[in-house]
Length: 178
Image (cartoon, rainbow, N blue to C red; front, side, top):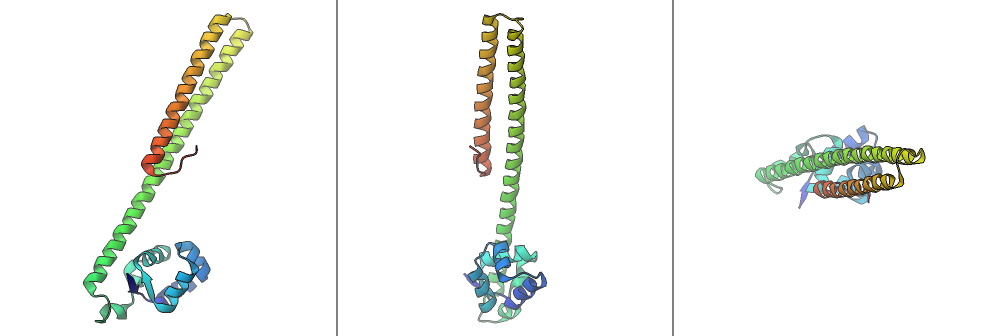
């Protein structure tokens, strides 16, 4: 649904920030052609209005054309209010989704750090086992037992980490690194 907006206000806001139409299109995620059409025809979709309001850090209501809101041929006040509420709700949902993704990335980062610490401790364990065997403080059978046990624990740790990382990526909708 196309809505009548105040193109002069958009142009004024864009020029006050010294942005070209190309820069505005990159910041909003809209195409250059869409930005040009909005400024030329004063008509935009709900999604475009939401993107513009977010970039200019103003409320969605400030982008609507005041004359269009009061005239009888345009969208009536209740429809405009409903659309505005829907756009605000979508913005809140986007913010919540973004917050969840950031939380997921933070948890994934902690998981990577945890795995690195576990991996490093296993490497110190291997170093100790090989050093003890090299200095003949342990016999071959004990060396083999310790080495194999530590290897199995390291493999289990890696598999557990991979499972947790995949689970976090799925839960928060973030890309996996493997």
